[in-house]
Amino acid sequence: MADAVTIRGVWGDMSEEMAVTVLGDVKRESPDLYREALAKTAGAFRMRPEALRQQPLARQAANIRRALTQVTQQELGAHLLIEWLTKTQKPMLIHFLDKLGIPHEEGMVKEGVGPEPDPAKLRAAIEGLTAVFPSEHVRVYLLAFSVITADEWASLPGLLEESAAVASPVRSAPSPGPSPTA
Image (cartoon, rainbow, N blue to C red; front, side, top):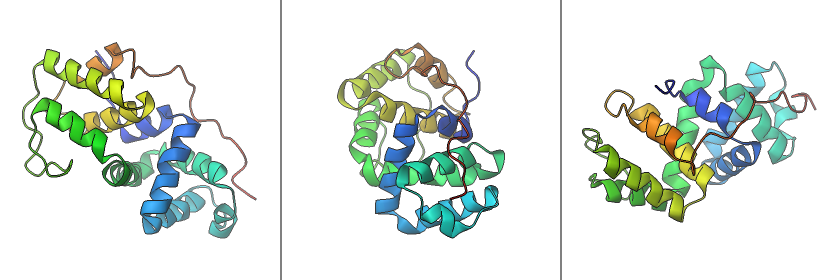
């Protein structure tokens, strides 16, 4: 049986390149949320926020990603992922929800996702996503979706592990990377 998926696990399993993509998109689409992430990261590492703001995006993303793997940052990690998905990944959300017949408005589910679909239908929807969208984007989306539906859709994490296209890359915990201080 698959381990329970957590938001901090999604961030911890994410490649550095993907973190730069997600956080760069959030910075562009939701600058206030990005500033909040910078402030909380600076606080987590006891550094001056200005020092973090002056770092290049890749270094900021590495530090934010590292902070988001802490238990205390799960709410912020979820908010950042939801913002990224709903602002920049709508076609992927719509594609998946349509394949499963889940009612939505432009990728936003209003009444809950409902009961877990048949595993074959769910597997086909996952494969449909991986045929159209980048595999790590799909993986991040489906892992986040798995956290949201953990109580209702028990087989989703196992199906994700089975799918070669979205299987977890062999990766160690986030490296400390560059020192958070400038």
